[in-house]
Image 1 (cartoon, helix red, strand yellow):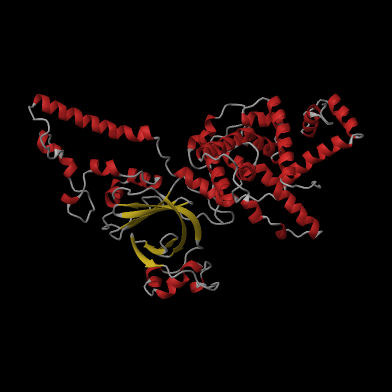
Image 2 (cartoon, chains in turn cyan, orange; image 1 turned 135 degrees about the vertical axis):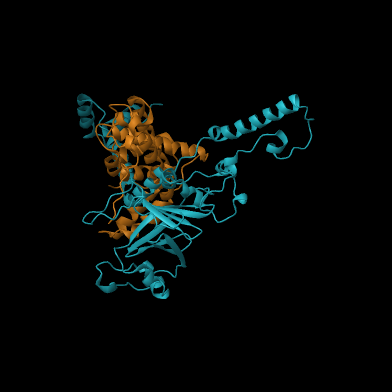
Length: 330
Length: 193
């Protein structure tokens, strides 16, 4: 039985006609046919209307948020494939087995005998530098892990921390190893005469970082329930709604930080926990390092963002420029 | 307002490639289109967002290695398509996810209609078409979305999907036919423009 018109061949041409994929002669032929054939008109209408239905009401992509998220992703080190991750461990295991075999074979150590610490049992001297106390540590040096042991279990640090460590090894000494992977969070910061207020969204804590290289922690009572229009001492910048309550409820803050020195900034950022502190990095490129001992450090990632239009460039302190005053042992 | 740039990340990748266009410009130009393409492909706004991010991350990392003379738009859509298909394979999805996002976000009641009754019917038809799209094989779906929504030419689609131009034309025809049949089988009424 013959296929009903339009047959597959004609429908294929109608589809190509809709896509502009026919040459001039074919296009004229189909157009002429369409003027007289209701069945073909119906098929072409169906193709057109199905396409129109697909196009309708397209959501607008969240451009700004994606830009920030992408930037964060590009800063987080990518996880290595598992063979690469396992190679060092496999190498270490193989070396240890080989050493054991050599000692058992050459030194006459009976196989199966319980082994104590490798250094003692195998007569390998422990390198003196591994036992050197790291500067700036509160704990006794004997309880500190060796550099090799520590680095073996260190998570990959935030790029900003890695850069800081490269410039000043004492930063890693004070912070210790990264203990987890970086996590995304929201950050609000505002500069003051003598420091910065910083709020993190995940734990709802507010930190006051002062220019003497110290920091204090406050529980975040939350933003002001009402819009706040407060000008402190005639300053052009206003206190952020995020800090109004903590500012008014903690009387030690105003004398500690002084007057507002600029408008607040709100970013997505990354936080990473270390053995003895935390590092927070915002998408503008500022890195805040908070050490459990109460010392703080911040600096600008030189690859960071640019100031917004119409605004004066924010201060971009280098690591050296914000080095705490002498006597602070970080 | 703080402006976050993408191009200050790695010096070697700051170099304009791909016909002189910077990654920053490419992100600006194609981010909305790529996101909506992925949303149409996968049907879930959160997944589409993640896939768009992953696609741009791959594009950024491959930017300086892109072959000379490559067309930017098909190149980006190829990355996005492969990212999307890989993700679907990873999840072992046999069928496409439902278009909940569209229903939730773009209920006809949110649009101020000139003719309320007609708009409601039209909204139902559109929703039914999208549900019919769920039934299509992924290649058919990708072809249709790239042609109808992203307005790529058959040659560009061939580039994106790694097919010949003739195969794209055939796939488009079969996809339209399949969509028509599924739509009618689901009780879809004649579509009006």
